[in-house]
Length: 111
Length: 114
Image 1 (spheres, each protein chain N blue to C red):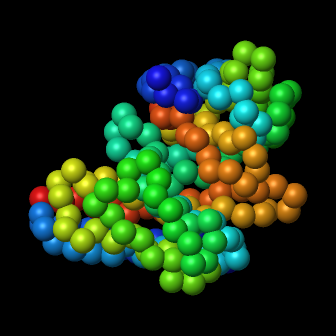
Image 2 (spheres, rainbow over the protein chains, first blue to last red):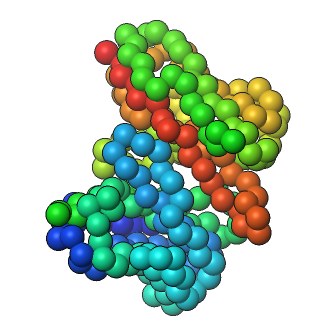
Image 3 (spheres, rainbow over the protein chains, first blue to last red):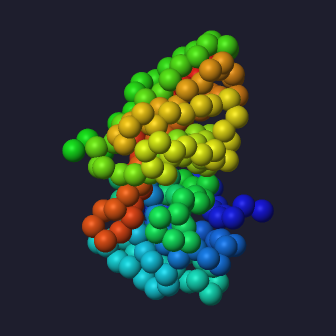
C-alpha cells in the first residue's frame, strides 16, 4: 500500500461546479501538506500549503486537513475550464523533510 | 528570477547512448531533487542533494548518476540509456520562501529512449 493514496480520475465536471479532490495517507507523522497543480506538459506548481489540521482558503481554493482521519482535501469553487489539470497532493513530517507525493488526480472542467 | 530551469526540453536517445540533464536554480536553495514521472506511477525520486557537496539515492536510482556542481546546479546523467528510462524528468529545489519551506519544480525534460 502506498503511503499517500489519490484517486487518479479523471474527474469530469461542468463549469461552475464545486470540485472536491482528496488524498488519504498512512503516516501519522505528516504535518505539512501541499497541493500542486500540473498542467499538461508542464512542471508541478505549488497551489496551497497548510500546516497541521484545519482549513486554509485562497480565492476559489480551500485546503482542508483532517489529521485524525489522515485525510486531506482541496475544494475548488466555481470551477473554470482553466482549472483542468492534474492535482497532486504532497506531505512531509517536518518542513525540511522530503515530500511524499500522491499519484495525482486528473480534473477536467467542461465549458 | 527564473526559478528552476532545465535543459534540454526534449531528447531522443538510442539504447546505450549517454546524456546529461542539466538543472539550475536561482533561489539560493540548499536542497535539489531529480524526479521522474510516468503514467500511473506519479513522481518518483531518483536522487537528491540536501546541500552542496552531498548527494543521496532516492526511490529509483539505478541507471542514473548525479553531480551537485555548486549550489545552483544539479545534473543527472544516464550513462547507458535504456528504453525503461523513457520518461519525463523534473528537477526541483527546496528552501525557505518567507516563513515557509517550499519546493519548486522545473518545466521538465521529455526523454525518449529507442
